[in-house]
Image (tube, rainbow, N blue to C red; front, side, top):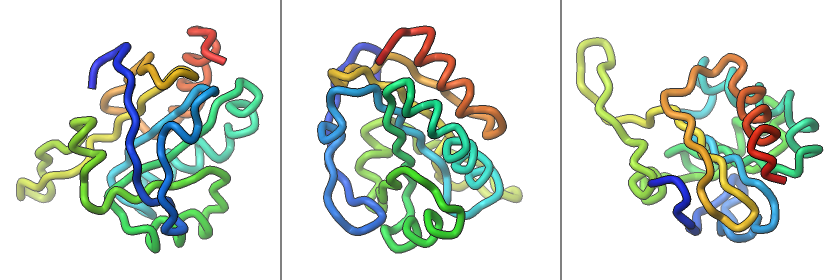
Length: 154
């Protein structure tokens, strides 16, 4: 995925309903990929977006979280942490492959393929404006908010 590229895709949300990125056209879109629902780093990141949600909404942005989890796992994660934005379920990895976020990782000495925590910021016309690679969960939502304001995206 490259800057200034326009993109659209369809995927299931936490309720098992098909959503399209274009459903959110007309407002800045924050799409954050995280490795797995209800794991420590992902929970910190997801709750950061939850806690910054009002500020992001004031800036006109919509937030979407996405991982390889099933809709059921996403719903459970959303309810457990009272997340106030949609979670997308890319269990067939189509969207992860489209964005190139699946990377080889070393887990306890074993090589596995997993999501590299990455966030994409799209303009209201679905043009990719900014990529945040290798995200650190703490404070990331505020970093994204600052970028939205800096780029005057809303």
